[in-house]
Each structure stands twice: as C-alpha cells, then as structure tokens.
Image (cartoon, rainbow, N blue to C red; front, side, top):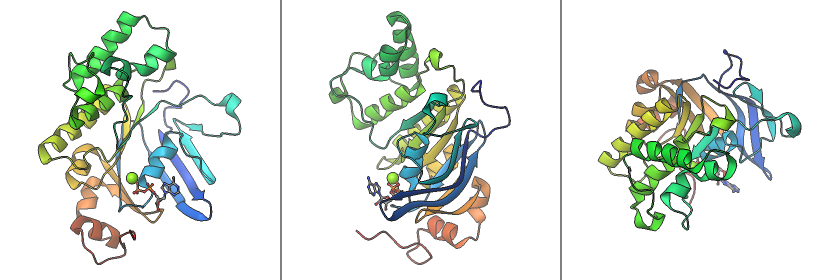
Length: 264
Ligand code: ADP
Ligand code: MG
C-alpha cells in the first residue's frame, strides 16, 4: 500500500474523464475505478481508446477534462510541487528494449540510474526478476540475441523490479495486448506471467486484450470500450452471460451489432 493512500481509496479512479486530440474526442466521459489487488481487463475493437487509457494511467497523456486519481492522489498536473510520481508500470505492446544495452542494463535501468543501491544489490534484484520470467542467466545477452517471446519476457521482468526508494508497496501494472500475435501455448505462458508478476509485486493490474482466454485467465473485472465510451462494466463471470448488445457482439465476434470496424 502506498503510504499516502487511505486504505479505502481505489488504486485507479477516473471521474467523467474526457480526452480530446484537436477536435476529436478520444475518451468521452469515462467513469471507472479499480480497487487495490484487483485486476481489470479493458476490451473493445481497434480504435476504441484502450491504449489511450493505459497511456493516461501511465502519465503519458493528459485528460482534457474530468479527474484522474491514482492511489487516492488526484493527478493535478498544474500543481506539480505537490505531486509524487505514482508507481505505475506500463508493459507496452512492443517490448521496447534499448538495443544497445544488455538484458541486465535493460531490466535494472531505473535502479542503475535513479537509485543509490550498490551494483551487487541491483544485480541480485535483476537476477530474481529474470528467474521469475524463466530467463535466469541471460543478463549479458543483447536484445538482438533474443527471440520476440524472450524480449517480451524481459519487458515483464523490467516491470517487476522494485525500487525501494519509491516506497510504493503495491504498484499498478498495465499490460497492452500482451498476447497479440502469440500462439496458444506462448499466450498461456504470458497470461500466467501476468498473474504472477502482479501477484509477486503485490500489485493491481489493467490488461488490454481482444483475446477471451487472456481476459478470463488474467482479470476479475471487465470494461468494454467502444468509440471512446464505456459501454459495459462487470465481473468476468457476468461478461460470459451478459445480454448487453456490445458484449454479445464482442463475445461472438459478430459483424452485426452496435460496433462497426474502424475504417482502414
Ligand atoms: P485502441 O488501443 O483501442 O486500438 P487507441 O487508444 O490507440 O485505440 O486510439 C484511440 C483513437 O485515438 C483512435 O481513433 C486513434 O486513431 C486515435 N489516436 C491514437 N493515437 C493517436 C495520435 N498520436 N494522434 C492522433 N490520434 C491518435
Ligand atoms: Mg491499442
């Protein structure tokens, strides 16, 4: 628990949040919350605004109106003197490893740069995270020597590493389409990894996915987004049987229904 977070505060709370780019409304009046230790899947067709929500939670986008609370702290970018960076870790769709740095340097990047920890301690922390993702002993490899799946796992290890100086005990982990393009066995491995990564870091998670097995294995709550608006929210169990037309169309991958594919 973040020490500034009152015990009852949700980890994430969006209140009537709107995000515009130029004249286009990308997110429109979103109300959403996530309790500590919970896992939420955001689903919806391409262009719905899912990645934009994750980028907003990671502090990479600013709302145009409405409010965003993280760990009970209002994210008020006009009052930066009173703002403390929340512990939010985004695992983006592309592993985005730094090509000129080894696995050790990629996973330990923040600790090498922004902590006073001695190098042997950082190496130990990196080794523990690599072991958790099944890549023990790969510290000296370069990203170009790794397969796509291994790069993905390194990006998970990077999200797991703790900096004791931030004093946050429950990070928020964000995963953007972690199993897109993977075969079923590799997908299962990544889904398990998301659950263990979140569990080991005692955190909460938001996963964006189109893949039903990923949603069912890695989340307890589901929010369906279409055209910048939240159309349905509920438990994974009720998602399986809900008769909301958006949910039915998503579940059955039907071409007919309220959601039209984004024009290419
Ligand atoms: P999703 O992840 O659900 O596919 P995104 O959040 O990436 O959707 O995008 C939501 C909408 O915002 C889309 O219509 C997309 O075209 C638009 N968009 C995304 N990134 C940008 C950008 N950098 N500039 C302008 N529009 C963008
Ligand atoms: Mg996306």
